[in-house]
Image (tube, rainbow, N blue to C red; front, top):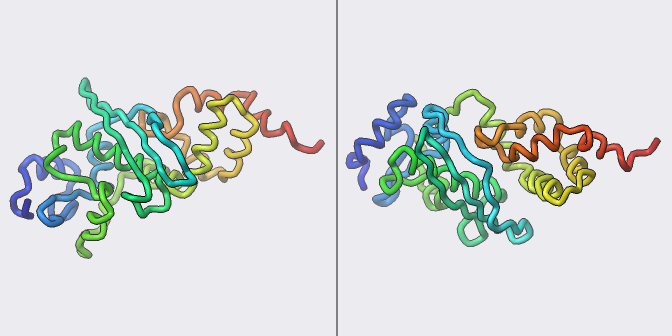
Length: 221
C-alpha cells in the first residue's frame, strides 16, 4: 500500500484531529502505519471508552504479558488481545506495550480502519522504519501523557498493587502504592471508563479507610 494509495477513510478519520496521512503515518514496505499518539487522539476525539483490561497471562520475570481490552463507541463494542513477550517486543515495559497494542487494535476496529492500517506499536519493525520527518503527534491535554509514562515506568508496581488487592492483602497493596509519589499516584488515578488501569472496585477499595489504615499496620509507634 503506497503513500498515495491509502484508503480515503484513513484520511477522513485523521482530518477530524487535524492531521493527515503524511503527518501521522507512513508506508512501511507496503503497509500503512499510524502513530500510536494519533490513535490516542482519535479515541479521545470520538469519546471511545474502555473496560478494565482482563489479564490472560502475567509473567514479569519472563517479560510475557497478554491482556484483553474491550472498547466502546456509542452502541458499538469491540475487543482485542494485546501481547508482549521477548520474541515480539524489545521494550522494557511489557505491560504497557500489551496495553498499547490491545487498545490500538480496538480503536482501529471501532473506527473502521482495522485491516487498512496498523499501529506503530504492532511490531518493532514498524517503529524502526518511521521516517525521521514524522514526529509524535501531540496528545490532548487530559493527563494521558503522564498516565502512559507512569504506567510504563512503574508497571511492575502497579500490577503488584492489583495482585495484592485481588487477594485482599491491603497491607501489601498499600506498601506498593506508597512506592509511587503523589504526582504518580494522581496520574494513574484514572477511571476505567477513561482507560484507567485500575477497576472501579479496586479504586473503591483504595479510597477506603481500611486501605489507608493498612499502611500503618507495621509502623512504629
